[in-house]
Image 1: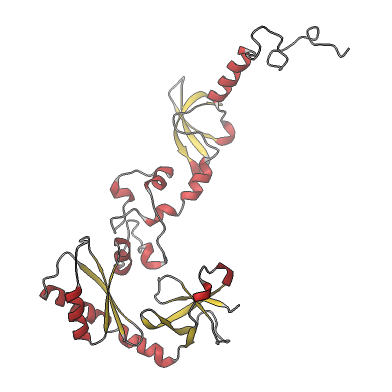
Image 2: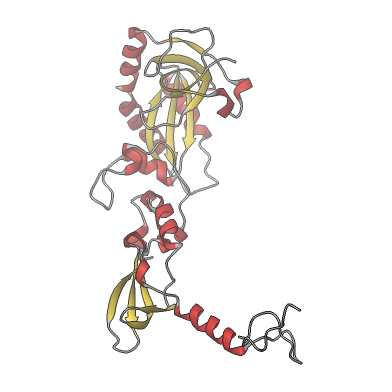
Length: 306
C-alpha cells in the first residue's frame, strides 16, 4: 500500500490527502506540485498519514513532483498580483451594477493559470455570470468565483478578537468546529450576544476550547437549586464553579453564601428520601410476614435454622 501524505495549499487551509506515487525521497516540510480540480497546485507536505485512516484512499491522486526553486519564485510573483486583481474585481463589479456582495480575497494558482475570487453574500438569488465572463476577458486566465461564509471572511480579513488578541481563525485554526448555545450555558457564560458572538457575527470559536472540561467537571457536582448538607448546615446551590470543583451555597439558617468543595458536601434530598423509605417499612406484604429486611427484626423474631 502506497504511503499517503497530507498537503496544505494555504497557511491555514485544510489538509488534503495524496499518495506519494513514485517519489521516494519526499519528507514532511517539502513543497510539492500536485494535480487538482483547479489545475496544478503547489502545496507543502505537513505529515504522513496512515492509509487505513484515509476514507477514499483508492482514488487518491499521486504527487506529481517536488517543487523546485523556480516554482517557489513563480508562486511569489503571482501572489504579489493578488491585491491588484482583487481591486480590479471590485471595480468590474461596480461597473456591472453588482450589489449585495463583498469580495474578500483573490488567489492565483502558483503558475497563474487559475484565479479564484472569494466573496460573501446573503442574497441567494445573486448571479455573477456576467462578472465572471468580464473577469476572464480581463485577466485572460481561468476565473472562478467561490462563495464563502462569515467565518471564512473573518479568517481572510484577520484583525483582533474580543480578547484583544489576534483572531484564532487567522492564526492557528485550520477548520471550524460546530459551536452551539449549549456550550456557553455549560460554562456559565452570559448569553448576551455581545459576550458570545465573535467579529464574524457567529458564536465564538473559543466556546469549544474548554467545553469538554466543564462537562466532565460538572458530572460530580450538584445542579443549581439543589439542597445539600454542608459543615455549616443545609443550604441551596446558587452557583457551580466547575473548574474549582466547588459550589456556592446559600445557607438556610443564616442566608450566608459559602463556597463548598465536593468532598465537603452531602446530597441532602437523597438522604432524606432514603430515611423516609426506611421509616415506611416494607410495602410488599400488606398482611405482614415481611422477610426482605426492610424492618429491623429482633433476635426472637428471626426464624430459627431448625
